[in-house]
Image (tube, rainbow, N blue to C red; front, top):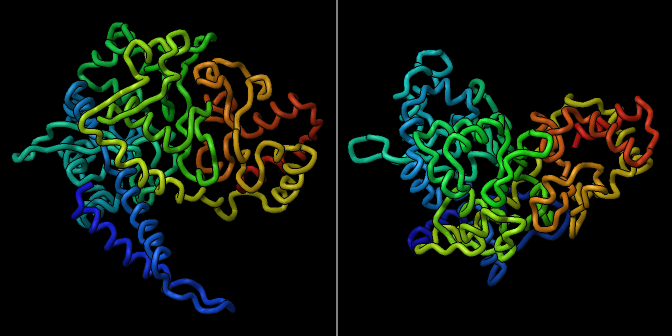
Length: 436
């Protein structure tokens, strides 16, 4: 980041911090003194990092347009797509990026959602969540890049389905990543990494389905489980991560580790990334063959962004369940079961809803197969945090959505641990989970 832009962030942060302090609620304690010295520097830095991180999360491509536009030429297909078709693939529109006339036109139905020119205009206004268009001086779409928000943000549908205000950190379980990539005129660069033909790549991408992505495919090449189902996993939430150690389905590393991993290896951004575990040709043959254990780019567009991105993600709270979305009385009974006879809190501690520290378990402890766990260095599954569970019920539960409902999960653990829960107790526990 340039010094002038950094200065701008600090100035904005100072205003934000002052406003925050001015609006603190009154208490019986002594009046809060204005911070000075290093305390003031900490507060300025905190606010600056969060604001910078939000911009990174929403709009930073890390130079990945060289891949998505330059190599796959995805912009040729996206720029020619109807907005209606883009919405059907799970792409979302940020209503706050639109002008008042466009908003009114969408509401009144006068904006033609079958006109590709509207898609290009939405891209020009940075209104397509997680997708950034690049235009030449003549207004022609020349490339396209993706950001963290593509998978880990959605909208509140306040204007219409797929169009509304951003909800950062919420997983987009409508997003069909595989089908979107398959719109590209060529997937030859992906085929080259995997050492297969383009037809095979396109078949694999089609197998993922909405709300799923296979981050391990470019590491081990294992596109399908032994039962023939896709190896893709559900897109996880990126909220409520403060205090959580490992935060992917199989616990590869911390939040900032995974940010670097995804930015460089999955988004194809230009940055540095190192993980010697990926040099293991037996477990990660694709990664070892392609040198993914030590990627070096000059310039490095990823590493300078990691601190702020991390700071922003750690302050995104898990959304609270809406009033009326669960039975309060049943939830209270379920709460007692959760920390009592059902013993859920043994792993999902109520303070974090996962374990503090090393929050991993063997497949046997989970009572499931080891396929996805074996694709990770520690060959274990992470204890998923449960806060905000109500926001990502679409697509099922566990890493691959194998359990269609919460009741199915409860039945699974009731059987695994011989809990002997009755049907009413299971119902109470389900209402409690919905309330988190």
